[in-house]
Image (tube, rainbow, N blue to C red; front, side, top):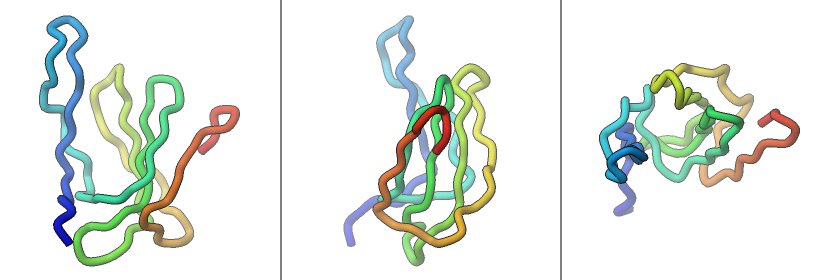
Length: 88
């Protein structure tokens, strides 16, 4: 399909104004949904290169670490994700 499926992440270092490697996600994915809540980034669904995903992960910017969240009830690819009143 030509779409990269990655677990790599990058972060902008505001002191140097340069992109640096961040910790990898648990699940490699593409065509996923993502949203921010405070200093957390939530990533849901997508495709691992062979199947759709229902997995979700959260990046805590202040801790610079990923943690797994409960999976969605259905696998989703190319989904939109947003936050409303602090809820995904």
